[in-house]
Length: 560
Image (cartoon, rainbow, N blue to C red; front, side, top):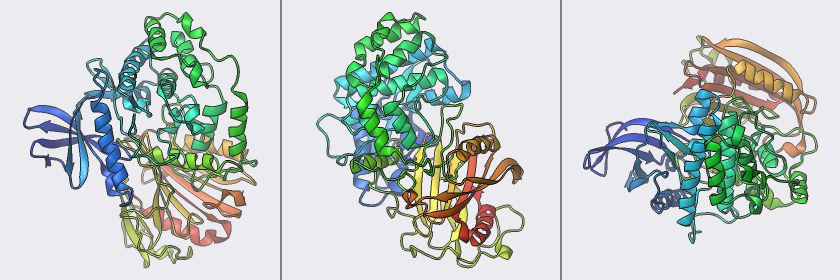
């Protein structure tokens, strides 16, 4: 792609960012002789044909929404063009980091600087709201910090344009789960105050180095958004009451943009805004929170999850010390709610809508939709006992070697390759904020292989990560038993191997089926700090075959 000329004028240079929905390129406008950024909609390559029109409409809506906003703190859209049947957005090039990158590198942002950043984001939002546009995905990754000191808000790819409801589905909720306002989690329509809530959560992340409501899964995160307070920030200083005011559970009791701007201006000067105290919540939001908790309560604490290292481990990872804690697929793992079916559909769409890393968001109705490159034509339910003899595995552990009979090598668009029995179906479990995880299964998850790639891990080592998970899992899973948790090298990189068993319950279906289960999770970090994990789980009765398959899969794994 490098060097490609688009529309006869934009020549691609190098990739400067990517996410689940797209890739951003540095490019040169050969007509006006200036550097620009171009967003390539890579997600269009992998969604089903029926979802492509909606995805393309959303991309065009992003450009249209941003173009309606005339403000110095909003990334300017220069052009929209089509190439290879996909739209590409030509934008202002901002040299610098995102706020998420800064938090990751520095650990925390000083309160006065965070308040200054918040002021500019607020001004961008006010201009957007005045133009009839809601951003709906304000988060640290969408706040750009220019080398020249500018602060800009980007990625209006899931923005809602007033009067344009044709590109979303009924009941669809879009946005990053960490920054969804409580009213949005409950299924209500968002408003300007919902963007201000997300700004408050973003500021909390900036000064504390962690997301205020991120828990161990999207399910528990959304439950925390609705029924838990963010807690007293330790490092927010004068910004603390402003954050608390913006994070009021009741949208009617949050400050408006003018009031919030005054508070942020005082905090940027190091003064604790007295007016913010008037906006602090005085009581819990009672009945609505209790109803939400009842709908999502599983009763046993045995909800499976996806760890940051990639394991579909049966209970979730802990919030890490940096800005990024991975998110979990809910469609297969979360227990169905006992009431309000619509709530569960909202949850599913929220998780799918987290695929917004590069721009527009697509929310499919369910996982498992056949996609290009997903072996849709292969048999859907091959036996889990497909032969995988030890003699067929590569002997050098390098990931090379012959593919066993009845297997095939799969090059995945996420950026790895792996050998699997033919016919295993692929689905993307989650793709958000640096974490990408891909599932492979022959039988709707009863036997599962999951690969996760996390460019922003929360722990310094994979062993530290899994050790923390083990402590939390042991108290929450039915009949949980750790078989091993040990450090080991994986192709000369420090890694970890974790094996355990538990008793899966009927309510955990369809990904886990009732009865004894066993799992293994091998994780490691490369020299660039990216965390990889290869996970497998199956009924314990099938483990003799599963473990042989896993040896082949593990040895076949290759980055890139």
